[in-house]
Image (cartoon, rainbow, N blue to C red; front, side, top):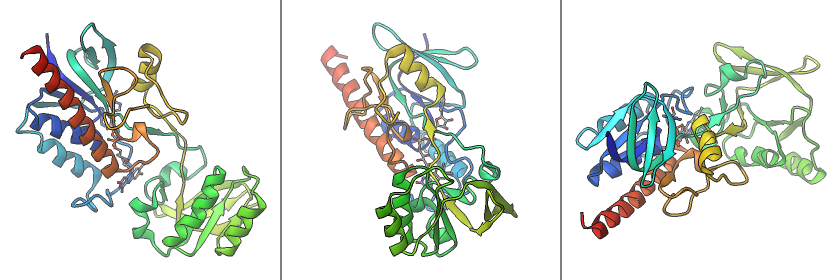
Length: 306
Ligand SMILES: Cc1cc2nc3c(=O)[nH]c(=O)nc-3n(C[C@H](O)[C@H](O)[C@H](O)COP(=O)(O)OP(=O)(O)OC[C@H]3O[C@@H](n4cnc5c(N)ncnc54)[C@H](O)[C@@H]3O)c2cc1C
């Protein structure tokens, strides 16, 4: 039987980082990636020390290349199933390969559910961003908009004034703005636009204006937004089949610092576990999961006498 110490599901920053740790710790690893990274629409990864400005595909290529010296097998393939065995797990891959493994690391990221608003999908990653730490510098002092889908996003309108003083918060008619938040925005010079949005106007692949329900246009160059997220189909499947626990926000629950999920032997790291999402944060979590999985494997081997 095809067997490994660890199967890692997901070859983004979290999975690659865990694979490097485990490979260097002499573990037999299979790293599977379906090739659908969260930042696929972005041109560069920003804010990652030594990799600032690197295209996402290049980042992953370097990550995979640096795994070559180790016993890490990389497959560009989707993992379809994870079944629990008496000892370890059986992992089923697209194409029919089945692998037995002692541990599984879920590093599957999250899926952003983009709204149907005309222009949104086209502009995602080009003029619509989720994180000012990732993309704020490049668009500093430009005309910013914030799509406020909840009350926290109203305060986000205040926060982003650190990058641009020209900020409009759009509620898209979906929020009753409390008076104290209204006056805080006003005090900070942030405009509030409460009319519904009809469409986002695109010019040369970038945002040009936000068109409101009555046809009025608000000239904007970038929008910051937090579209809802969901877990990948595999994680949803494991919630049903193995009782993998999610927290109240829908992230996979892990214990710190081990990154073990509610299913012993299955660990998780990266975006799927937290709202604090970023490439470097994911890579750090992946490394920590790698350390902890390796520790438990070494201790298990040593106490078994082998
Ligand atoms: C538009 C955009 C721009 C961003 N820009 C930046 C930036 O500049 N700087 C920054 O720090 N962060 C940025 N981020 C955030 C950053 O991309 C994520 O935080 C980071 O990629 C998370 O890493 P991860 O390894 O957890 O998940 P991901 O990078 O999403 O990788 C998960 C991988 O798992 C794979 N997968 C899922 N299910 C399966 C399965 N069943 N079998 C096999 N593989 C599977 C997917 O195909 C994917 O490749 C950006 C995000 C977005 C949306």
